[in-house]
Length: 448
Image (cartoon, rainbow, N blue to C red; front, side, top):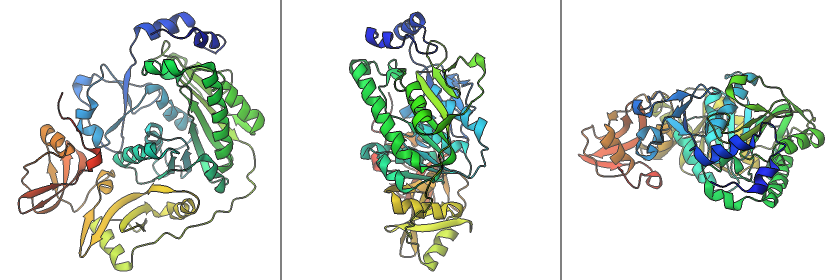
């Protein structure tokens, strides 16, 4: 891999940049492979993967080699997420600033495909996470990954950053992993080398400022902003952090980081750089800032979401063993649930934003029966009252590929389980098995 000379020269004054080892690392070393476990789905990674813990994230694991993830049912069941190790540093930042039980409202403003959203959803046990993606096709991938992850406290929106101005001071914590020139991922995506230019860097810098200016009104006074990129360029990193402090009334928040981790402290408190020649991870920048500016208006409209009638609500509560602290609402003919502590916030979001997914889809009422949803099957936690079929590896892959299956089970709806990880539903009617794994998520090629 030959790095552009203009790119290397542009990094000469960047904190922590060592040209010789940086170039050598890009020429001779392959990117490391890492995954982050889902703490709410107790799975065991394969011993052959030879894992080692990521120092700054208790759920992160390095793998000795890159396996065929598509052929592992645990990936499809939300048991882990394949994520670049450097970006898992957000877990360490959260652990310094928040308790896991803090009841917050959080925005991941540029969320697709969902790595950082699933991390935030796992760290916080009670908080409401709004994961937004402006590009429609990428919003669909975000929904898929959050459904598989199984957190009940998530909302996925498909909105332009300007729309969040309708929610002044709504969020306690905001993550903006902004679109960037992508130089931090050159080792993973060598083709992106051809797209890098100094003009592209400046274009990205201006776009990052626009996104931040649009979403920051929705951050409360005293709220925390995590600003991140996968770029090495100072124009997209420190320059943006300084602009936020000088023009947007933000202050830097110091974070303690062990020197042994190899993370470079930028020349701004609470800002850090990751270099692949210094640690096991790709290029990454993150800055932690607190909003000092007062919010002028904190009035939110509410959209009164439709709710199922009393009999229907009772049927769903009994069928899915829901507590009284769960609120139900309708999306078309589908019944969804959200913890009641977030009910008012979801109605406020519905009045301001286009919501693709809120809470967990339970299913649809058909006469006296319920067609259960794949979304509820993927939600973590006990599945009381539903029969479970245990699959071996070949059966699990056949299920995920929607291939023919012969399984002995009782008539009706059955959950399918692979080594403790729920994969979805089948329905058996007089020895005929109907596979309800979502068609558009199926494995297209099994084996190899």
